[in-house]
Amino acid sequence: MEAFNEFLASQGMTGLTVRSHKSIHIIGTTGKPAKKIIHLLYNDAPTVLDRKADVARRILAKGTSHPRRSWPVAVL
Image 1 (cartoon, helix red, strand yellow):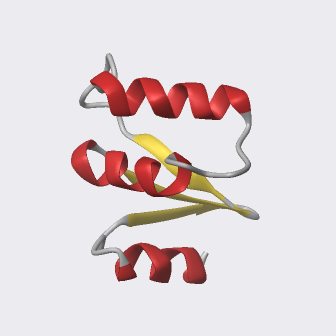
Image 2 (spheres, rainbow, N blue to C red):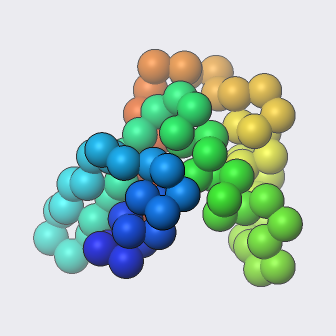
């Protein structure tokens, strides 16, 4: 999780919320930072799961239907 958080910091995203539950770690954010992370992970990615790529495309195209809801960006 540290390496991923450092990667995000190198892309200008700092102060993200990191939560853990047993062996699962989640970086949660909303709004523009979330869209930027989604863009970094899924835009022109050579390998993606179709269902996740579809959700990423919808979010980047028009936002979510729940603008105040916090979506976990990465679960590692």
